[in-house]
Image 1 (spheres, one colour):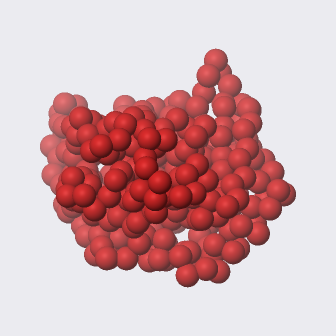
Image 2 (spheres, one colour; image 1 turned 45 degrees about the horizontal axis):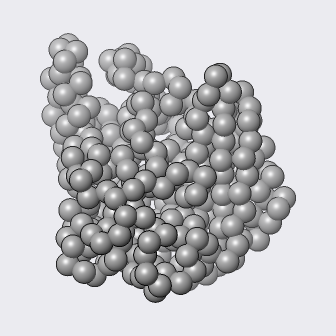
Image 3 (cartoon, helix red, strand yellow; image 1 turned 30 degrees about the horizontal axis):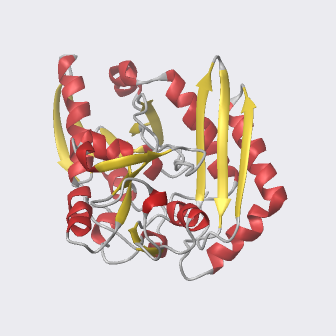
Length: 311
């Protein structure tokens, strides 16, 4: 059995994820240790994510440790992984997805529709922001950074009337009691890969891939390949207002995708069925571009709130 060194960010959620993987590997007879690696996204806490503008802001330093051989595998929230990896890296595992929906978290209100006029809602996601503003143009969206506990403290102190978090992260941390409701994908389309964990390895390490193969979920991999094909087709990264969510039902992939302006004034949505994940994602991206998604994204990339174009 192998001694496996796992690279992870140091946030509470990231460490839960890394320890979860370590526990599963130990059950297989391996020994596992976790090395905490601080990423660019962790170092910059006082700026909205969309303004940071760094490709792979939550993965770059971890990949450097992987390339240098300081770690054997890296655990990521899949939505943070750039759509194209360098050839030296491989996504050896995409685990079975947890709840992909966004969660509505509030002290006084149970649903988005119940918020009073001009309510303050916390999120640093342009994807969430634009869909929120489309639903409720009156709400004030305020940037919200920090780990889940920090965000919840800010909510409870009255800085926000509500915050929007990923359901999966809240569940993994055992904080579901704070969730008042969940927002369905047809209302708020999730980020590509939301709710899924990925394990990244070196491409030239087939032995490591063998050790990890039992963790891979083919159905989730298929759905997320489709979502990431949308993202790649639109030239977008994880900090831009793009959503994509696919699920397989009765052998058929059902895909929802959206592109929107951060102020919610324009949102393009597509819904499609298919069997080939990558082809379905690419074709859906092309339909969005044909309807004007390129104009929206070019305006976003050129604005102060946007990030540089990513592959």
